[in-house]
View 1 (cartoon, rainbow, N blue to C red):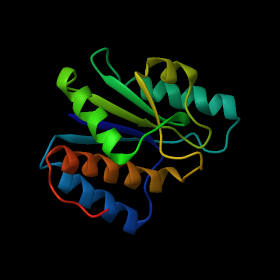
View 2 (spheres, rainbow, N blue to C red):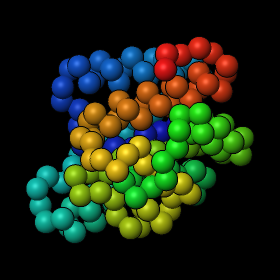
View 3 (spheres, one colour):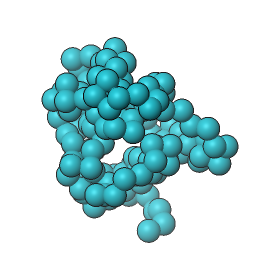
View 4 (cartoon, rainbow, N blue to C red):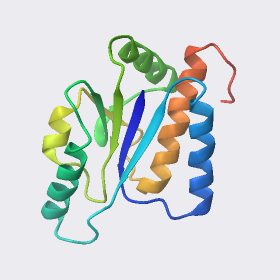
Length: 151
């Protein structure tokens, strides 16, 4: 089971369509749940991070293998990420990816993570990043099942 907890709503139809397509593709390999939490808007940064962290915490449990998406995290090539995901799934039935809001993630959430993942040192809009994450999860399953997928 893979869960993605993400701060912020998807508004654009083309992104919703892409997300739905990857959800359908991933469902061949595993159960997938996306939990979308309301962002705190343009309030003061530390308050926003704290409130969003509290919302995220409500959806976590001790059995989850938590992976935070952070600019400061470790970068992997797709094949390395696929291998890492395969190895994590051997011992963990629940993998949770967390995408923070505009100001990032609360330290309390980062401390719970067993893996800190970065796709790039660049900043991406969270709506687009959700599509990128789903695509890489799908790619990982294709790699791990020795199935062809475009490069």
